[in-house]
Image (tube, rainbow, N blue to C red; front, side):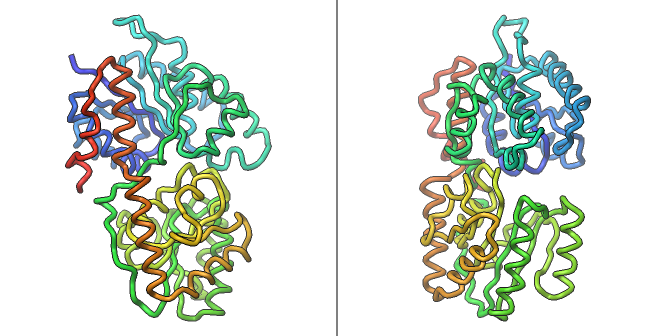
Length: 391
């Protein structure tokens, strides 16, 4: 009988584009893959990989306690039905409510607890303000992740230290280099030689991602350096900021590209990716992808981003929520010669190859899963050579 892996996730995009290679590798190793995820036409891509999709309603940003309580019972019912050998969960609600749903459950066939591996992909805006939601989430994390999961992965040391300090996780935790980056999917490209230097913001259009700081910096920098262009790629999360983006676009300050599945071409045409996030990022995939393609990065000094950007070598760091410091970082990049910009991009690619290759993440997961199901495969490192990663 095949062993079963159950994925709990809150969004198609984040799971498919950052975990697809792991799913393919697990399928190749003979596991049956089940995916609990909200209903979407895009879920057919998981079905095409041979997965069984279980449509599950998850309100990613909702705070309705009744709906969240129902999610616990949904996950509990799914786990009982699937009887997975290992559960892999991602993002705040699948982690918390998946672990609560799994609490006290045992596989009737083996008599053992279901082994769950949680991944703290970032804390979002939850802990940026000390309000009721922050306090509630701390309590829920303590109850759900304190002792129950088999393992909890963190994407940066600062998040792990915060969880440990606030007693939201036990000793069963380890670090991963974010989600890693697929070095074949995001190949190195030479720095553009255009006279017009192009910057791009790739994120959801919302306050916590620093859209206001980016817009303000774009206006001021374009006044000082007319031969610059500022792009925005990402879907709308907050209507008031979307209206602001529209206004700045009408004024010729920025160019809004909307949400795109062809992010590679967006990165390729630009010289530098800017992420002015306020925090809660885990390890930002957009910075990993941009660096892999040989693009400089400018980011705020927050957990995760400081792991990606080697300040002054692969890009520049600035103080979060500080418009002037962001503008100074942009000015420093503009002051570089083409050769210096190109060296910065090349250094970013080398850093990704050395520290953030997605195969490192895949192999770590495979080792933990094989151990959880009682296998001992000394050749797991071979997964790093898997052709599945070469898209």
